[in-house]
Length: 271
Image 1 (tube, helix red, strand yellow):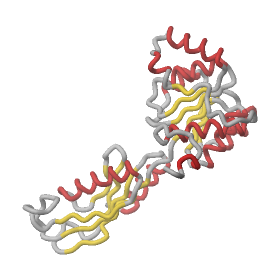
Image 2: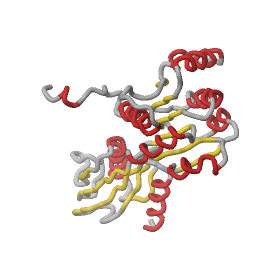
Image 3: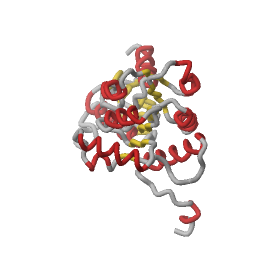
Image 4: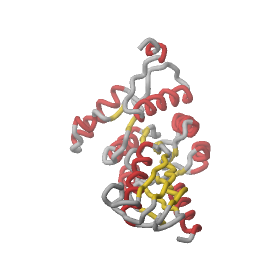
């Protein structure tokens, strides 16, 4: 395959936030289908390029998918010497060693609302290595500071309709803090239809009680509502947008790592 085509494929994956792995033959001994070659393996199982085809390539693709899942790199050896004993079912008479390099995508933080808190959340999320998507319905000159710190910005006309139609990948982290109760409500209803890893919404207890009742009247189950982190954030103190953003992103990070407890590390030192 044309090396430029492979590079373009990887660049598209990087720009599109698609996790992938590059499989490269680093050693080939004896009779093998290829002495060199590269293959991209994408998170959906699709491949681009080849390291020789056959069962060895299938095994390499499977191992690459595991590397994508774990985010780790690996060396793998595929024995082609004897169909009776090797791990490929091929009888070429040699072996190939490959390097599998994993390129996991950045986690996506979707910020619904470009106010002071939203702007601060975007900044903190960026520092923490998240890819950020900002959603708002206001003009650029009103929210220009938030737009400037987001990786991407989508202006909506109708929060519920437009977020529902938006391609938000599974596993995204969605934070809702718009400039109005109705927009928060619309954003939450649309977000609940996504396969998000986390949904958090700013709001008082009174606001949340009324909003949840509205959701139930629209067919949202209590089980779905129980997944929403609201009021949003960890109780670490502070009232400024920046302090609130730290509390929010601390909760997001805890959720990202499988709901880990937020104990002090000193509490764990003797365990």
